[in-house]
Amino acid sequence: MYTKYILETFDKLVMNRNRPDNICEGVTFEHDIRYGEEKLETMDLFYPSVRTDKPLPIILSIHGGGLYGGDKNTIRAVPSFLASKGYFAVSINYPLPPKNKFPAPIKSVFKVIEFLKENKEKFNLNLNKIVLTGDSAGAYQASLISCIIKDENISKSLDLVPPCKGEDIVALMLFCGFYEVKTFLKSKPKFVVRDMVKSYFGKVLKEEDILSLHASPLRFVTKDFPPSFVAYASRDVLKNESINLINTLNENGVFNRSYEGKKEGHDFHLDFRKSETINCLNEAVHFLNHVFLEG
Image 1 (cartoon, rainbow, N blue to C red):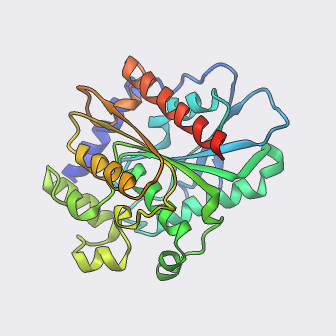
Image 2: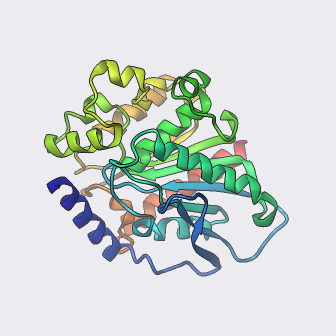
Image 3: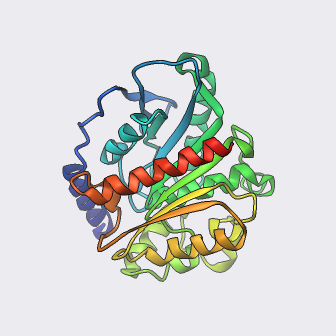
C-alpha cells in the first residue's frame, strides 16, 4: 500500500504542473469517450479543429503510473500539444492491475484500435500510420504492444489477436520508460519496483517467466523494430534503461532519435512550465515529421 501512496502522490504533483485543463488553440477535445465496457475503458480525443482532406496519422498515448496506477488526465497537455501539430491524438485510461493483470491492459489498447477502425471515416484517420507512445510504465507497455503486434509468435503464445498489421505501427515515442524487466527489477527502491511487477503480472518474474511471457521488449529489437524516439532524464533512476534501448536500436540499424533532459528527473516532459519540456516535445515532432516524410 505504501507503493500505491507514492504513485498517487506523484500523479497529483504531475496534475498540478502540466496544466491538464490547457487545451491548445485550434485543437478539438473530446473527453471520456467510451471504447469498451469496463469502467476505466475511456479515452480522450484531440485533433485539429480545421479538417483537411488528408487523413490524420494517429498517436495513441498510454499513461504511466508504476504499472498499476495513473490516469490519462495527468498527461493531457502532451496529446493536446501533438494534436496542435496536425496529429490525431488519443489518450486512454485502461483497467488497472492488480485486479486486471497482464495481458488485460494490452487487450484494452487493442479495443482502442478497433474503435478507431470503426470510426475511420468520422475522424478522417490514416490507420496505416499509428504511433504508440507512453511515459514511464506507459512507455514500457507501448514498446511491448509493438512487439506483440509485429511478432506473430508472441501474440499467439499470449493468445492475443492483434487489431492491425505490424507495419501499421510506424513509430514509437517513449518517455522515461523501462524495457528490460530483469534490470528494472534491480532498480531502486527495490520493494516498490517488486510491487509494481507483481501487481502487473501477478507475481515477481523470474527469468523463465520473463521468457515465457515475452515480457522484455528490449530482447525483441530487430531491424524491423519501429523507428523510435527515446527520451530520458539525466537524474532519472531509469536512465540506463533508455540508454540500453538506444544502443540496441543502433546495433540493429533501427532509425531513432533521443533526447536527454539535462539535470531533470523522471517524466520531466510533463512539466509544461519548463523550456526543457517544450524542447523535448518539439524534437519528438521533428522525429515524427521525418518518419512520415520518409514513409
